[in-house]
Length: 60
Image 1: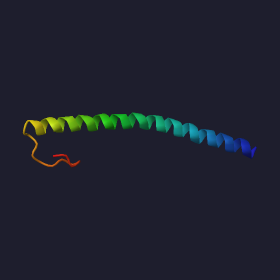
Image 2 (image 1 turned 30 degrees about the horizontal axis):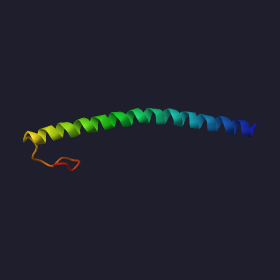
Image 3 (image 1 turned 60 degrees about the vertical axis):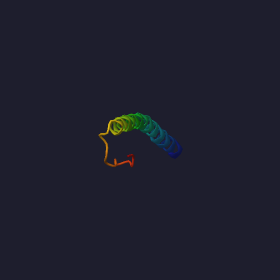
């Protein structure tokens, strides 16, 4: 009986972890897309002369 409860607990943990990791992949993809968008917009501002200040991620 203890082995069955332990098995169910392990399956529940790994099942929940799998779902959390799946959701975190979408969060990661969204964050990378937003970072790239900000990087390109910042690059355009710098190219047209609008960017003279140092940005938070250290790009001039």
